[in-house]
Length: 555
Image (tube, rainbow, N blue to C red):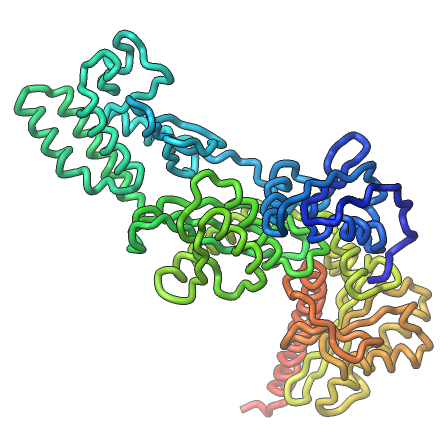
């Protein structure tokens, strides 16, 4: 794309080795500005220095140094890039800003006397089984208490030499002092493991027998503890929704993209299925760079690499939406490095789970997305359409008629990416009979710009016509009559069926991702002009019908 301004000064930066790996652009203070991967590090960094796009110019002009991390192959580079982006969260390529540390429970199966404990950001250690992540610390800690009350599994870091408070509270069986044999304690740990794996129902018969036996032996405190444990397990089971996907650990992942152009946020929902039941869900808010060409593909690919590249205990299977393409490279890397199987959810329970994950993501996005500054989207739109200036002032035109009657035109105005409703205008079609949509576009554009010129008003930075090539040519004809050039009034049209953008100098339409931020802005302008035209047309029809009724003779 053409540059939007003068080329920024480019510092002398090292070019790097001729091998695959990851590179980090760093500022003077040592902070990381941008992280990228490359098949050939030297060639890729040279491309950054040579390219004239805004993004490359900003990065290189602010960079003092480039750090290179060579890898054995491109797959290693892809996974390392995702990990470093998550670690450093650089300014120019972070789209998964999620600083939450998820709670897990760890069970030290490798110790002679295993213990269970709460942990955040766990490390994968031999002999330690991880369970989670859980939705909140409260959920994880309540499960620790349930395990202690039900199975009296120890929680202390080191084995004490005498009975501690937990033993006296009946929440630890005190294997440290021999109050329980190691064999019996291991049996209790195995029962705790079943509960952590979501198989609590299997424990209920044994616990009910324990409760009855304790009551018969007049150990009423112990019977009450077991009774409370049974209630806790049943409450836990009631909160889980059985989906019958077998015993494998499965996640369902889906993305929700913004519908509002003022938002540069998206969300990904992760629904966790453990032992055949829904064990919880985690929504994640993502940032969308304004110049992202294919948001659904690039966002989901980045999220999968960053999330599953670091998660300590990945699921065996991840269900994905059927319609998101371009994920092959990321899925191949995660399949090889983390042994995760990725499956497209086409029907049945898998598809239902992905739809649930999408609803969760949509709800999270609607609740937490914040309006963004319009500047990045406007710059991206300027680059996409190769406009001569930043499109701070956009006008949209549409025509509405049914069966050639009550034809009207609408004109909407957007300033800095937002509707300026005080500047909207309506037009009754005066010179065109029948259903000649092209001639009507010509009339509305001619009348609008003739008035702007007569009143010496500022011309828009972009004129957007609702329609295809024919509507665009009709508007261009009106501008030529007024001797206005495409430099003075940049113009484009947007066709509904395939969301194609028609430009005067292109023989074929531009087919950009309709969910990319600049396309969302164009669609917003187009849809608002259509809504405004339809509203006016309906009012004109009601007025015409009322006039006909008034002309009817009185009975």
